[in-house]
Structure formats: structure tokens, C-alpha cells
Image (tube, rainbow, N blue to C red; front, side):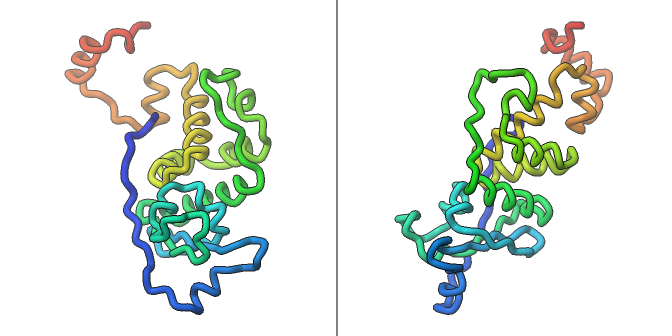
Length: 195
């Protein structure tokens, strides 16, 4: 994986009134809804069934029988900014309607389009700039949303294929090594620097 596993800090709202519980039910067909709240305090409402793709959201609920939770508590996602959480919610809502086909390894093709055949998911990751793509990788990891993590990591890895070490350094915003650090790295990891 591109990033280490981290823990997200969530803060559940436990002071829900009866009116709040009733407000989380949109209608009988859609089931309960939940609000995910960004670091900036913006909230995004979505069906709880869609939000359950996030293990973090499921873990934040006090109800042990998660699937029968009729009044899920809102969850603050303190490590995710508003624009990124908006994209995550977009992904979760769409995934509920059209689940992402599993990205199998070894990969079936060496292009993103060859691996991900569903057009919506292709457009979803291709429609974001590089910083947002990296934010989505981080958010997917923090929120434990495996399909989103798989999709975004695949896009990053496809962007890095065939690039030189210097191009990868620039893309990933890795600081340039000092001459001493480079000499040490060349000594310890010769295979990386083989030209």
C-alpha cells in the first residue's frame, strides 16, 4: 500500500433526541440516513446502507447489530477535509447502486481502463486532480473503505508506471535527497538506482 495504516479519530453524537431519530428516516424504502461531518464542520447526509461500506462508520455505532441500526449516530471524520469528504460520499452513494467490481491481483491488464471497466469509476478518479487523488487515498485508508482504497491506489500506481525515479519523486512530492543521503541510498539500495 502507498500509505501506512492509520487510525481515524471519530466522535459520535450521543445526544440524539426522538426528533433527530425520526429525521434520520427518509422513507421506508431507503432506510435510515446518517451524516458524515468533515474536519471543517460540513455535514453530508447519505443512506446508512451506503455509509456502512466504511468500517470506521460501522465501528462508530453503539448498536452491536449494525444491520438493524434504525437510528445511526452521525460521525465526525476529523481527518478528512470538506471537498474530499464530499467526493467520498459521492463514491459511497454510487457504490450502493453499482458496486465496484473487485480489482483482482495480479492485474488483468497494465492500464487503468483495462482493469476498471466500469465507466463511472473511471471518470470518478480521472476527474480529480493529483492532490485530491492523494487525499482520497488517505481518506479511504482512514475510513477503511477498501473498494475506494483499491480504486485510488490503482490509479496512482498506473500513473507511476514507466516513470523514472525523478519523475516519481516529483509526482509524490518527495523532497530531493542531499548528496550524502543519495550516496547512502545508492549504497544500501543499488537495485533502485540501476540505470
